[in-house]
Image 1 (tube, rainbow, N blue to C red):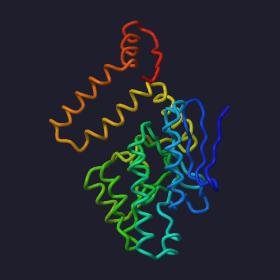
Image 2: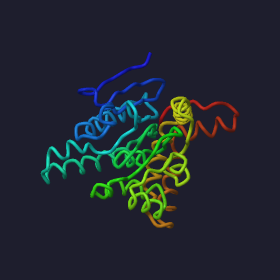
Image 3: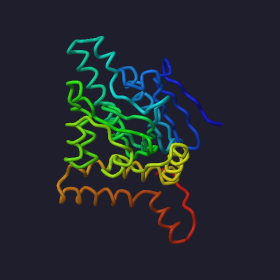
Image 4: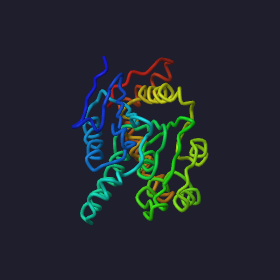
Length: 265
């Protein structure tokens, strides 16, 4: 049976089943906009899941009509102090980094809109599946607030000119356009979003959890290195990976034409 866990005030819902944890941002009345408490709840859940060996993959989604509309503007305007702004954006940055550093793959399941920090959230996840009517934007420029922190995640997913066009115009782009520029992996019909995302998660969950952990860490570590340093680093990672029990099992299973039995070590 699925295990359901709720954070304080149900800001984030968690449902675990068959090695996959579904995290749902649960502020539908506010298009799942990110308050400080909401972001901290997401990080708390990720920390808990990171220590749960039964979970192989996380799917992140939003309740109600959309994925996430970014930071909660009402909360920001109700607390017009520099210290509160610093806490908000520092917490946001910490949350995005926690997703990148999280030892298991995270898939964004996107419907409705993903704007500003919501678009950043999609960019920060390892993979993203969106329904065909989903829309994406970094619209801060329209209200006098350039999307500087969303820019960090966005510019590490798409080319510079595509990122700058989104940032400078604030215009929405379609799911198809988001796919074309590399912000998301797949575009599917609305009625197929759940099944398509689950299918992808199940495929990844069938792999060695140790291999996924090693590979995800290495992927992000090598990105900012020069070519020579990246190859040197990844060569060391490959050697370490080859020494793992799961690598031995995987190679033996391949040679023996059977399914591998992963032990996560």
